[in-house]
Length: 264
Image 1 (tube, helix red, strand yellow):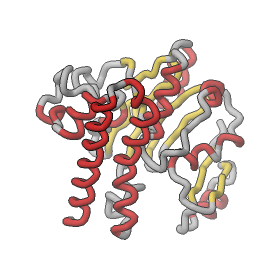
Image 2 (cartoon, one colour; image 1 turned 120 degrees about the vertical axis):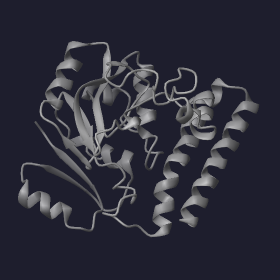
Image 3 (cartoon, one colour; image 1 turned 90 degrees about the horizontal axis):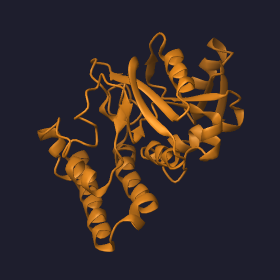
């Protein structure tokens, strides 16, 4: 097994620690914070394995998770990428593990009206997080969260890895879109699990305090990514008037998030 750490200009001696304590790990040193997409792409040239696991740094791998997911991928040739059950530290499912593409309806019910919080099991209103499908059930999804995404290197090379127009968030949605366009399935496989200490990178936890400017940059990244994805992948699929309404909705969400950050 080959392990590559792509370091986005850290200032806490992470690179030194890895080289001293884990000399078998290969390190890619980036001189600045390139973002999630570009940071992972910098490891592409070093990757020699037949399969690749994109893995967040704020995760804890449970026994058998790697082998079981690899076995599943190798046993199902029509599957392009697979993820396991990604749990938060409190044992609950990280809902972003399995998602639907943010179509206008899905975005409206999830981001604006938030109907999936009121009707979490509804197939009509809870499509974004697949709330109508039990989290213990293996099933096809549109999007796999890149905190744990396993695929063949051949397929990743075919779709050209991550789109670097995304700084943070949205790059996994875009990657899954490209994988689906090849005719391959994406699967949520909850037979195994990992732990995701979610929010540390974006300064949401006490472990890492960020200045307000940096907090806004990280918290707005998901909203900015929404607009990038919609313009890239969905703009041509819907009428112009609907596209304008969607953009207004995205800008509204951005305004609300900025307001919350300033107030807090």
